[in-house]
Image (cartoon, rainbow, N blue to C red):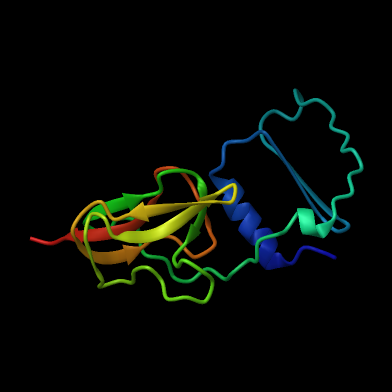
Amino acid sequence: MTIDLEELAAVIRLLKDADFSEFNYSKGDTVLQVRRGDLAAATPFAAPAVSVPPAQAPVAPVRPAPASAPDDVAGAKVRAPLLGTFYSAAKPGEKPFVQPGDRVEPDTVVCIVEVMKLMNSVTAGVSGFIAAIHARDGELVEHDQPLFTVVEAA
C-alpha cells in the first residue's frame, strides 16, 4: 500500500502551519519523515519497527479541495472552539447544518468539531445569514480558525 499524491498534498497542507520539529507518518511500506529546524543540532532518529493493524490506525479519506471562501469576507466569524475535525452534517450523507444564505440565531448549531471521538456542537453565536463557509467537511481545523462568516441581521 502506498500513499497517493492527493494524500501527500493533504498531509503537507496540514503540516504547513503546524508547530512541530519532527513528524513521522507511515502507511504500508511508505514512511514519511519531516523535520524542521537546525539539522546539524538534530539528534539521529531511529524509527522502531511497529506493526499496527489497519483497524487501529485509520487514515482519513482525502477529498479534493473545493474553491474555498476567502477569510476576509465581511461579517462576524464563527471560529473553531478547539482543534479537531470539522463536520458540516450530523452524519455522513445527511444534509449540512447550514449552507450559505441560511438564517441563523445565536443558538443555531452550524457544525461539529470532533476531538478524540467526542462530538462538539458549534453554535453561530450571532443572528444573521451565513455568508461564507471556510472549512471543508472532514478537514482538520485549528483552535480559533474561522469556520463561517455570518452577516449579522439588522
